[in-house]
Image 1 (tube, rainbow, N blue to C red):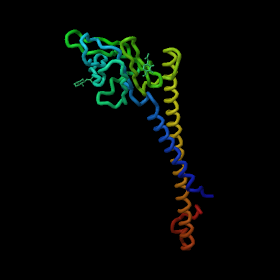
Image 2 (image 1 turned 45 degrees about the vertical axis):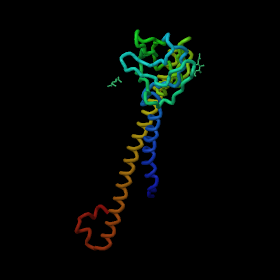
Image 3 (image 1 turned 30 degrees about the horizontal axis):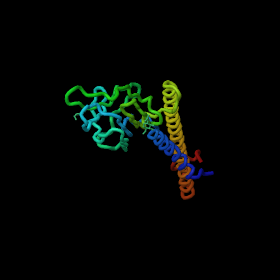
Length: 228
Ligand SMILES: *[C@@H]1O[C@H](CO)[C@@H](O)[C@H](O)[C@H]1NC(C)=O
Ligand SMILES: *[C@@H]1O[C@H](CO)[C@@H](O)[C@H](O)[C@H]1NC(C)=O
């Protein structure tokens, strides 16, 4: 019996779908391919450090990087919220395992700049892509970093552990799918080759028989009598 052609089509299509699926999985997995860009979600300052009442120039700065001036933040006790797409965003990018020493400052024309606060900004501190930094009497800010997302854990280490193990199982899943896909692809290719071979043999046979019926002295001519 001939194997239906559509079965072959399916056996070729499945690995392709699997590959596509693993690609989608990869690109949707946070923290694998996506970067750890940190944006400012909101900020409220509680004071300015000048003694003359004036509009402050507030900026965010990480050691060794450029200052990011927050152009809108001028008034105290006003909650400024941001979409993350403002011209001065993102603030910085976090490496995987290392923290950055960053802070919020106020420009001062006479003295060195005033410090609202300076702290270690770590990818692990983000819970569901969000991190709130609050300093009494100074400011309250939320930072957004979807690529930094850690699962909610009680302690620092357990949070980062679950995150990295979740990431590992994600990667493992992708690898398994890729191996499965290439295996199926190989099987599909072999099946197609076998099918093609079989068809060719059948066609040859049919042609042979036709020739045989047409010519009486066909056997002698080709000397292939023993085959049939
Ligand atoms: C800092 O700013 C300068 C000038 O705007 C730019 O050339 C440089 O690439 C920036 N550096 C970083 C780390 O963003
Ligand atoms: C800081 O701001 C966030 C977001 O606006 C808010 O949920 C939180 O309650 C604030 N925390 C304090 C101590 O004001």
